[in-house]
Image 1: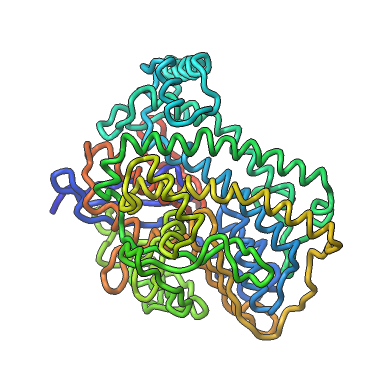
Image 2: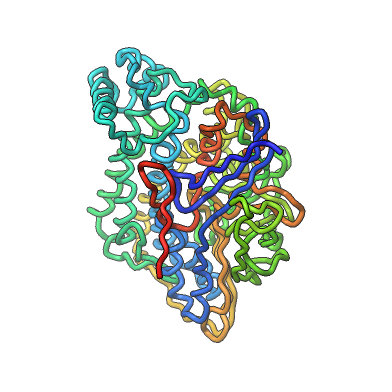
Length: 556
């Protein structure tokens, strides 16, 4: 048996995640992924009015609140047999699109970027050479000058001299797996600081139509309630003003930085580090017509990285099982019949996960009995395989800029690049949606809600594409109340434990075969896991700053 490496908690994510790996000669031979906190909100929904579900299920997460709200409303609308009017469809796309922009920017710079960028190395960069490097990847780089880069260095040095690194503390600076030169590190670190301000604009855009963020309140079954905002030209102007600045940052900072990083990490991409299961699933998102048949992101699947043979999605083949999850009912179940009954069995005598038993609060979603990855890479791969013109042009253009083949997509690097590509894709569409909304209102259509009543019996599902990937909510109604409610969230697909057949989930499979430069500094594990943008049950870890041990409290 090899060395057991435990990373718990995985930081710079949303929620609780533990990764255990078995390592031999610095190579990961096996891996286990465990969500360590039970959420269980599905159980408190039973017996409630279906129209209340959207506000409750937002609490699945403290970041992606809107998307659970939307998925729940969609599930109710499916069960109620009601369609929202055109204005409501467009406004939902505008709220959702704004979340894509700020969520992806925040992920790359503040959650994932430090897996690629060595902050300390930036201190030795030449600001003049940093300007030259930035301009090699963009004609007009964001906030680019010798003076600015020197100021960023001074700011970083102040952190170091005071011994207070703040968000940059306890990292693996100097690890051999960092490959960017000092100047590249300085350029991206400067954008890290810029993004702290820029990303807020997307949250502000969401509040213009969503009332607040997080936990917006503007959706209702059958439409939206933000009527006055939709009819106010100044509110639309505020939205477009912020969109312009966000798009500028995406095109002059985010995309160039990803291409810059790819130039130095291309060997990892070419060798497929972090590729994982190489099966990709997308539900489709952003309806573009009133019948909801045309979607910005197409729905479908790709198996075994076979881009030549995309698969049509069959919802009946979606199941969850709990053979290795801390729940009862081990057999695969479709979400309409799913259960959420805990059955906790703890760790083994050594404090390790029981890899051959139950070891996670995450169930194992499967499509046709097979584990699938969801998220930005899945959306790009599915669209590319289906010959979607705009997605193909964006992907091919990025590949051309990096000089890399399409096979590089199936890697940690490809997953990170896909997120940047689709940020531009969504950003370029948003202004057109605003214009569509204006034209519809000018044409005399000011409807924002379709009247509806709760049926006595019914079932429905809401399937959409949040930033992190395919999200589905399923509701069954009996006697006008919720009889059962199940949600399979993106990180459930990706964080999945093993299934009855012993197949690893995407996180687990993506780590197998990875070589660690230093086993006591598992930077490579963080880089791959962060590329999925994990988001599970929300909670807080309290760490002892002197020992880095997790504080344990007992409440009488």
